[in-house]
Amino acid sequence: MLTDLLPNQNTCSHSTAINGENPISNEQEHFHNELNGKVNDIVATLPKGKGWRGPEIFLHKGFWLPQTAIKSLLMIHEYFHPKPTDIFLAAFMKCGTTWLRALMFATANRHRYKISDHPLHHTGPHGVFPSLDAQIFLECPVSKFDNLPSPRLFATHFAHNLLPTSMTSPSSTCKFVYVCRDPKDALISKWHFMSKIRSKELPPISFNEAYELFCNGISEYGPFWDHVLGYWKASQESPEKILFLKYEDMKREPSVEMKKLAAFMGMPFTAQEEEAGVVEEIVKLCSFENLSNFAVNKDGVQKFRAPVVVENRNFFRKGNVGDWENYLTEEMRDRIDSITETRLKGSGLALGLMHKA
Ligand code: PAP
Image (cartoon, rainbow, N blue to C red; front, side, top):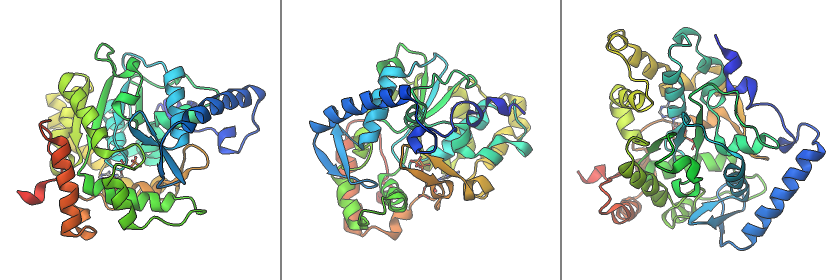
């Protein structure tokens, strides 16, 4: 097994001064001081909103971001060099990144690893598939991610129009897989997740408050609808560059969506593979029930931008479609659905309006 190629082993999991575990070098200190100065200057000019994890988020070029995410974005713009074969997994928070990470990694590496002894068992979806937003920040000064196997796979929560054109321009050959979800389920999932990782120094955010903030678009990486529309429009303009998936379709027909995904990634399943049940094997390996029971996903942690350390178990809650029914009144549901309908009108995209069918 080529574990030497896994991100955890080469670029992505060592401790750094950022997370407070290693002494910081002068070079690193200088690098971060300079960047922090730039970020402070940017943030000083931006409108502020209430953060779900930390105290504040800032409206930067139309999207609400914590200060540390603005720093990551700056680093991506200045230091990240996409390769033509890179594939990015993009999503608003809590729309299915963990699941897609596992599916995409297992698909891309299906000739390398046996299902019975797969790196996902030991390393988990986050260990095998780095978050560009977090890793660019953790690697000091900045990793070139040169040791990652091709195609390099990176996840991002940043909106399409915030990313550098070297990644998003239709003339660049790197690809995006975007996964979206009924905003009502994204809201419920995000409120649970953010409540768990919310700074203990801050009072909790009640569900009603989170609901109001979400409807008003004030939510890390959001507004939700602008995030989705940015990738949707880009996928309509360049379908060969952006594959637009829905969590609900993945749940309903995982094998159908998987075949689309593999073909888009340039690694279609062969007739022999389909006959041998490879698609179903990957779907099973990456199922909620399977992944959430791996020890690494029960006991492991992810280090994001300091001071954020997230227990892997928090990436697995219920994994269902329609859990919003347990939280939203009819009135609340109708308000979100009506925002969705209004915002997506004329785009050709429909999301989360199933109860009206
Ligand atoms: P992130 O934004 O922090 O990366 P992300 O993985 O996108 O989170 O979303 C988490 C949601 O996906 C959770 O949904 P829930 O709160 O409604 O339950 C999580 O349970 C769900 N999830 C994680 N893994 C899987 C999987 N293998 N299959 C289906 N859903 C999954």
